[in-house]
Length: 71
Image (cartoon, rainbow, N blue to C red; front, side, top):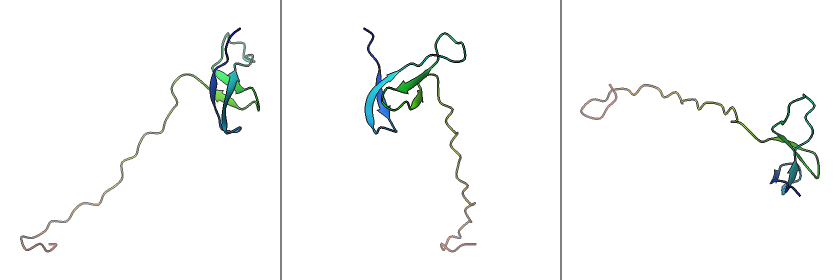
């Protein structure tokens, strides 16, 4: 008997068993997994395309005089 992997299901809000459903695209194996309780699908493979961090714009600093006042 093959054990089913367990993952956190966001719909069930619990750790439950997931199974690999039959591939409708004709591939040998798809990377999708489905919750055995509610059917919520997870993509379990490859690397997620995370958005790149954007740098915050910082205004240029104004020069200060030797007395500490802004020039």
